[in-house]
Structure formats: C-alpha cells, structure tokens
Length: 265
Image (tube, rainbow, N blue to C red; front, side, top):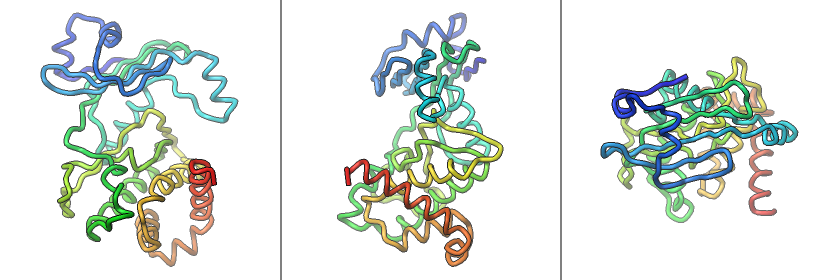
C-alpha cells in the first residue's frame, strides 16, 4: 500500500519511498526501538514523520500477555484519520503513507502528516484554569466541542486508546479564542486507535475515563462535568443520570484509579 499527495509524488518521483524515509533527518520527538517520530521540512513546509520498523514477535507476545492490542504499523493511524475526516472531525492531513510486508512482526510502514501550525494543545491552553477561571463561554464551548467529537467518534466505532486532553489541538493559539463556529479542535496521535463495527463498552469507558483523568487538575466544576455528560449522551442530564449511571460510575472509578496511580494516592 502506498499513498503520496501531489507534493510528495513530485519530490519522490523515481525513488523508493521506503528507502527515502529511512534517511530523513529532523527534530526527533520520539525514538524507541521499533518506532521513530520526527519533524522535518520539505520545500519550506513542515511535516511529521512516523516511521514503524517492525516490532518483533517478542513485543507482540508481551503486549498480548498484558491484554494489550499491539501496534504493528502506521495502518491504525492511516485508517483512523480517514474515518475521522469522513465524520467531519478535524484531525491531521496525510501527505504520504506506505506499508509493506505481511508478517506482523516485521511490517515496515511510515506516515507523513502536515504540521498543524498555529495550534496549542488543550493541556497547555487550559493549564492555568485552576488558578484563573477562563471566560465562561469559552469553557462551555470547549466542553461541548470535546463531547461532540467523543460522541461522534464512539458512535462510529472508533476508540482512540490514548484519549487525553493533550491530544486535542486548539487552532489559532491565543487568549482571544472565538466562541462562534470557527472554533476548531483537531484530534491527533491516533497510532493506537481501534476501529470496530461494535465498539465494546470497555473501550468507550477507557476513552472517557482517560479524558476525565487528564482534566482532573483543571479546576472543572460539577456543573462542567454535568455539561459534558449531557452533551456526550445527547440527552437531558436527569435522563443520563438515570439511564447511564453504571457507565458514568465505571468512568469515575477508572479515572480516579489512573489519578491515584499517577499521584501515588
């Protein structure tokens, strides 16, 4: 499988893309034995490269024994990006993608995405909320936007699996974010994403619990949490508290467990 947009088709014409990506240099963001993520430039434009070099059977078995789904290539992210775009959810734009091999332990793959410039992660943008309350309309709009993205994604059978506030990028990075329809959030880091026809409850709980956990130090009020619950379930608060109480209890227990482990409570 190989995809190249017009820019990369022109620049990589006549060359082997799988060989070229091995030689790309740039600012390294992550480097482990089987995967490398870096930022590089081409013709004055900035891109991110995720290079998967085969994780080996040892790592696959390790993940399976720990009841985790192994990530063997960039295919997860490629598929998730395309599905999110079909749903109208802002995310990364793919400039190049390639995958070769059948053996899951030795698959080679890469994904090049355009740099989402002039953005800030919500983790950074909201970091001072506990000390200084944000404008109410901004907070309300962001909560509803995140809930809407989460609802659409899960309804379509997509589980992010690293669903934290840091993986939402807010466009137009400044303190005067508009509350009208041009407020944009892009969801990134989809390399562990899971897509299933019938997404089990445990996967949805995992995502929402991760999101809640990552917001626990932002000074959110009970009303803020209720607003998310109402918007995510797309029903009146009283109804979701009656009909979905088991779900919300599971989310709370898992989120508090994650928070306790992080802070050794």
